[in-house]
Length: 215
Image 1 (cartoon, rainbow, N blue to C red):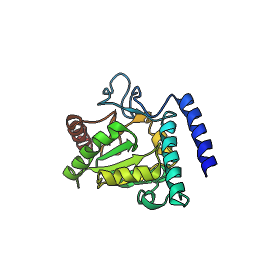
Image 2: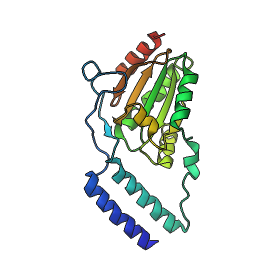
Image 3: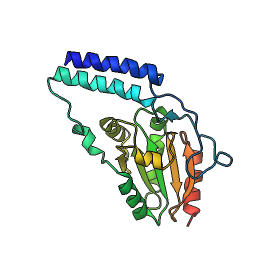
Image 4: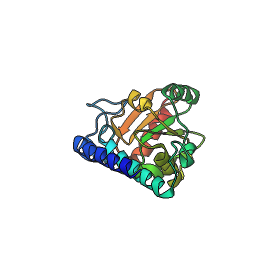
């Protein structure tokens, strides 16, 4: 086990040199439903959601492996808290959106390691409770470890449905290139606005109101 950990740390060192470090700020691009010309600027800081995340995830892998070694047992993928966050495929996601059509929908793309995602999580729960029965909310975690993502949902006591995008296909099919990204969808199933970056109360109210007006 000690040899395996040593080899994993060596691979981590190489990952850091290639990726340039752990997750950090990324330059936001236009989200789905907007263009570079008329889309809103990022509401707040963003986290890169491509190769840079792997160094941070590798650190978590080392920590999990070390904990398993000292506990004297192997770590089983999807065990414990990981099972509390259901996986969602792209096909299932599309069917879910079709089911929810007829009411406005807010889709949040996030990861547990993303600082701005953590900052805006209480706001999403607040507005989910405020608009319950009028606006649907769902969260999609990707580029993450499933147990870490499940812990995020528990930590912030998120009451709306959250899912784990195992292959990141949902993430990429929606043009998400940084986290957090939020889609505000009208009752007609069309994206009213996409926002890349952390949201504040003013923007949340503005775009939920716009989604409610879209019939």
